[in-house]
Image 1 (cartoon, rainbow, N blue to C red):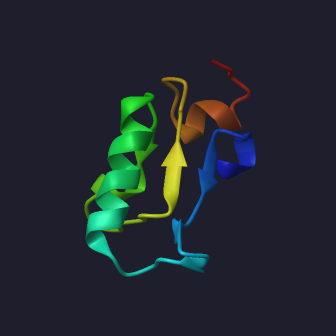
Image 2: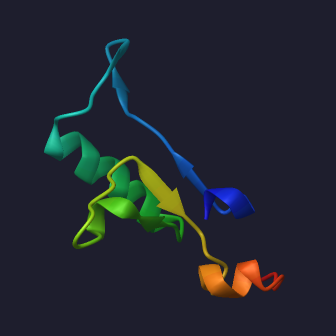
Length: 70
C-alpha cells in the first residue's frame, strides 16, 4: 500500500527516544490509529508489522495494480 500512498510506517517517541519494544506503547498507538479508521499492522497474523498503518480505501493491492482508485 505504500506504493499507492495509502500506508505509512511510524515509531512512537517517548522522552526523545524511539520506542521499539514496548508492547503497551504500541497497543496505545495501534488503538489510536484504529480509532480514526486506519488498519494497524500490529493486528495482523503471520507477519505482525507494528509500525505500519494503512487505509486501503476498500481496495486490494491487485485492484490498485489494475489502476482502480477508491
